[in-house]
Image 1 (tube, rainbow over the protein chains, first blue to last red):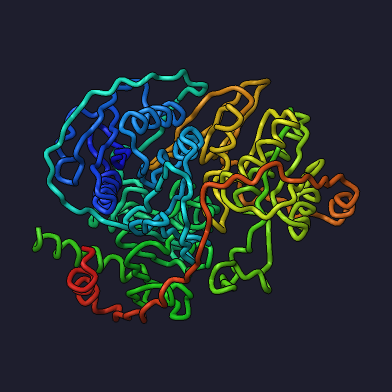
Image 2: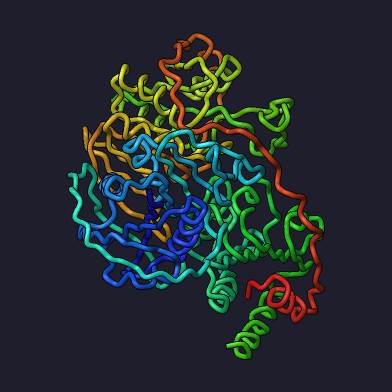
Length: 317
Length: 248
């Protein structure tokens, strides 16, 4: 009974989080001494999956775009076809949207925010809880098990395979929801997919001062984010607000500029690996939660950091 | 329009998180409980529908008698009636099943839940309810308009947003954006007095089917000390990020 992974792509390219799901799925398959199957939508060239341990890929053509109910139904059919009893998804907005529907459809236990490989006998996984203030070991007691993997928790692990590809034509159910409009910046890295996030707070004094934040993000190939007060003041769009009631961040590098580090903010960004804080106030609570800190004025430090990073990038490219 | 808002009773964000019984249970000692913030945005949007479109708004929670203060707060904010399903929540599926029964029995048009609770962060209850009820479902909902039986909702996607149209009955996983932080209502004295007279019905749980169980908790290892870098020595920061942290 193979492990099944749902591999998300965007513009026919696999997302990094999806390749991480494949790497994790491979490791679970090895633990359970089985093979790894994947289901992929609207992507012809799946050869990259052979680098990350996928043995077999089911390719689905569905021209109508993402729909949680339809995708959940297709993944359920793929699971039945492959007799898979462990299914792994990412923590993307789409995966989180469809996972509960899939779980009900397959009468499967679903655990999101998983950060480690499962233990078997009994089958249990370690997840984050209490907004990253704790971990919870959770048993899944159903026959079919669904794991939602946290972003950046497992990493990419290469594992070459001889990938088999098979066109899969599931029954497509009719949908009760239709997409009217999609607004998406195509030229920017999203916070969810970013390896690095550059985030700024009220210390920037006004929206007119964000140029240097965007430039720093540009140099690093990073997404830009902001604290709650900044989005409440309308300095930046709500979609950039990270924290407990905003977007969660699980990047490799999180740079916080002029953000004091309120507990609600930290709850949202705590699963980032490396945190750098730049703040004028040496007593800012963020310094207690960070890995590297600079006490200094953002208006002096950030331009210098941009220049030094440009030099560094030029030397290391 | 009949609206049901699902309320989770959660530790306030600033609470110290500790565990008891050999790390198998959350220690509620000294913890202040609140309406789950994502649910509160939804409840406040429901109040808007009540004022502008004559909706009735009921609230429901799965929990023991200690959670009634949270339901009373929802009534003080303006909900018409409350239900408490008298059982300690076990897993997301069991909670979704219990809530679905209330939703079916009350024949609600719109069911609003938060995108996730801030304690277990599961984010599965609204989607599971929709699947159980066979209703339409919009997750990460940041805007909702209802016109007759038609609904227009905006959902947050990675890197943008998506506008969706659907029909009632509808379940949403709501979040900030449905209303703004500044729209949230602090109950006034009149609201609190009126809430005492509003019906709060205790229902016995229908089933206890679970798919998962929390066996043990642990707290993250204490963080290592921060390394401070002088503001005049940016080269050192770049060196640390490159050679030590290996993130650039």
